[in-house]
Image (tube, rainbow, N blue to C red; front, side, top):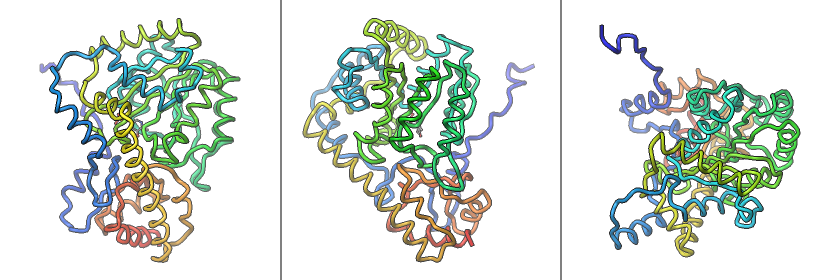
Length: 399
Ligand code: PMP
């Protein structure tokens, strides 16, 4: 009998299936709103100027391809800490933050999950309803039981803050709570500052463990304001985890550039945590890749390139916002039923459009417009060339 006779076929990734259906569609006006990447006004994946410049400078001084330290490039890790916590944060100046370079945001979540599971395998991990699909998979794969907390209220297109706070009150101490720091994927709906304060307070009272995921810093209100939740948690003194990613903000998806940062109670505790994080990395993939992190570090530590990057990221953010405004205006122009103003209040690359699975299926069949069956659309895939078609089609399936 074959070794693999009992291997079951794993379920297909729904988004990959959607990309295949999009690729097979021969209609010229087809649009893929199912993607999770930022496209520019021409519908192309950008190569940012700051990145291109850093690549050019790097090529000018050829370097041999040695191993990086297990926790990555030290200057990169320091730059990550400053972006997330701010240079003046007590946790940073008191050397209570440990940062390890990771394989994108996904890798950061996985290193954090493995570390936490070794610490307390009986703790549960709570994720939002809905959440990025891989949250459940990563934490379950690390051995945890994953539970849900209410997050999105479809009727009001807003955060179900009462449901969320009540769920936190019911969790056992030590429960790990995964929170989207900004630009919630898939809904685009974030907590405001007052609501974050309530969450921090409840988590502190209940001794819950915050694990913040920030994959879109700079895509909401700006680099600094998008880190507000991280800063509130840091100021609370709670031990915390942050998984961060430069996939989107540097348009470096394939280079796998992210980091896991852990805030501990003391410098000494941080060194011990660091030693264990390094052990997780060492026994999984030994050490991280150099190229992407070297580029990011170079940009963040070179004032002219950093300013260029901030400008470019700002332009990406503004373009997404313009597309949100444009979509709302054109939906109204096409006589769409209902008020779509909530799309303008959402943040980041995604919007929970309110379309149901049947309407999403009609969008694909009748109009060649592909979205996730939950109704999630990628606003960053809209541009002046497809906005009107998309608005017309959404209005038609909504009638
Ligand atoms: N967290 C969230 C909420 C995301 O949306 C993503 C990317 N889609 C990630 C983490 C992972 O990012 P990366 O590609 O850097 O692994």
